[in-house]
Length: 114
Image 1: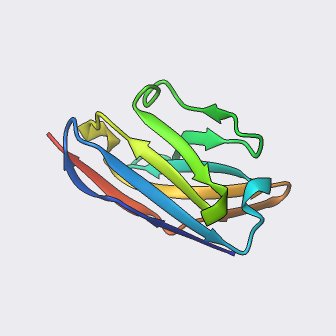
Image 2: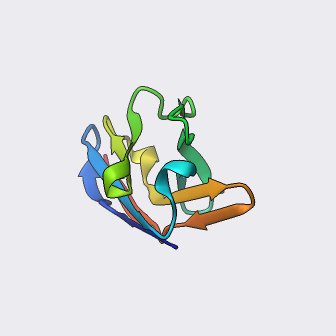
Image 3: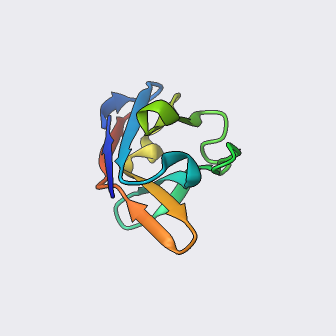
């Protein structure tokens, strides 16, 4: 199983980025997927969740700015991030979970300058 996150980078406040997470080795549509982030000195937190049935959830801190989506044909998960803020700076990780199995991508760094 592999989850390969990409798309991070340096962006100015107010800008946008789209993260991608290419997966292999799992039946993509059967897994709950999520994007997490971890800023220096802070715990990893969920920023977007997507159930296998297609329901989404977001914490208040990103609601209305971030959108999680998936392309089943490409086995790829996305995170569209708009109106980025300096406090969104973190390493972003994709996650796949089903039953007792959980997999993580390697992380991609997002830096938002003020």
